[in-house]
Length: 200
Image (cartoon, rainbow, N blue to C red; front, side, top):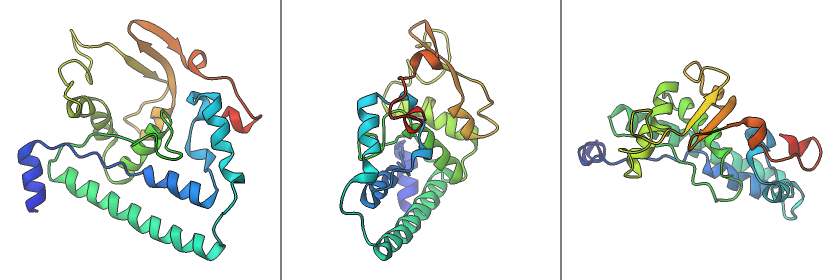
């Protein structure tokens, strides 16, 4: 409680990075969970390396893998509880992925992190605020980014489905507006690699 009070009074931002551990788990187990990522926004060279994960030598024995999975699940649940408690205490939360760690990929990791924040109990609107306004504020750029207002950067993402109904709808990107230029999802996607797997 003392920590929460001090963090709130100091205006400290909390970035939980709930899902970065999943990449380490996948690497250790030689098991890239393809369905967790929309890989069309990942460059082909990185995508090819990602798909090599399953064929790396040194996968753990089944019993070791099961033990590690139990520990990882316990830690993840603790992190969800911590986020809920910190958020409920009024400490501002900013979404972040820690991308660059193994199998935490720049771009698609955002979706998984936002969905985990919803799993912790944040509403879709609260996840949206953490990912936009409060993310900009945490970087010290709250006066220029993070909200749609006159005089601010007008970079936008247009979705096909309502993100306030469910966080998974953030995956339904239709258009991106960047510095006044409009691009469709199709225009932004890298070409598929590696057959059906690469087209994800």
